Amino acid sequence: MNKQQLFENIKRKKTFLCVGLDTDIKKIPAHLLKEEDPIFAFNKAIIDATADLCIAYKPNLAFYESLGVKGWIAFEKTVNYIKSNYPDQFIIADAKRGDIGNTSEMYARSFFDELNIDSVTVAPYMGEDSVKPFLLYPEKWVILLALTSNKGSQDFQLTEDSNGERLFEKVLKKSQKWASDEQMMYVVGATQGEMFMDIRKHVPNHFLLVPGVGAQGGSLEEVCKYGMNSTCGLIVNSSRAIIYADKTERFAEAAHNAAKEVQAEMSEQLKKIL
View 1 (cartoon, helix red, strand yellow):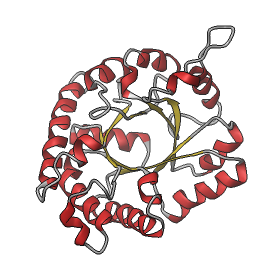
View 2 (cartoon, rainbow, N blue to C red):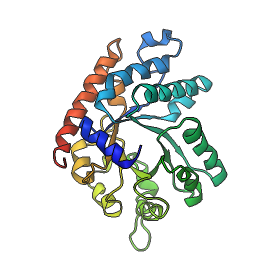
View 3 (cartoon, rainbow, N blue to C red):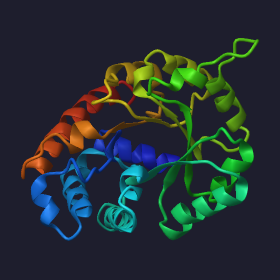
């Protein structure tokens, strides 16, 4: 899926919501534990309930890898289900990979060749040669960690050099030499607020993947105020606030309602640019 197709989906569906499939076997409704594959059963119900309200799904690999082979099978089944039934959805493998070149090449092969996923999150701190293998797939996306929403982001990402340039700014400036805004996005946490203005000074045209809205307390209004551009430029993720909106047998309906609230707010924000 290219950048224009992504924007067309946003305009058509009046949303830029990404539903994070952070599926924890210890948090899903108890009645699903009787299923042959509880994780996939949960994901399938969530996807069916929210697909008309979002433009992307983001399975977080840690939640699947923690279950060993069973979890990886559930992850693959989830990806294949989305691709078969909702082909307009942008799929993000939230894997935060980043290693030396030949290892990154294997990671890229896993997600892009084997699973044919649209994008993968990548940690850039080992430099260009750790990212380049993912960029050898021209129709796929690399989503680089830039400025995250966790408290510890201040430990390194906001540190300044002698010229006052912060580390996340170095990442933004340097990485643009590796690929264009047609192949690279950046992760920027929703809790960063006005920092989006600084981000946009460096990457005015790139899409930003924005986690942290909902359970982590990020403000969608602030994200849009400081981060939205003429083609929206935002994919805003919400995980727990949607998928765990209810833990009874009506969990899918509750997820739909939670996603609908976010979509309605996004629709209003999009009126400013459409």
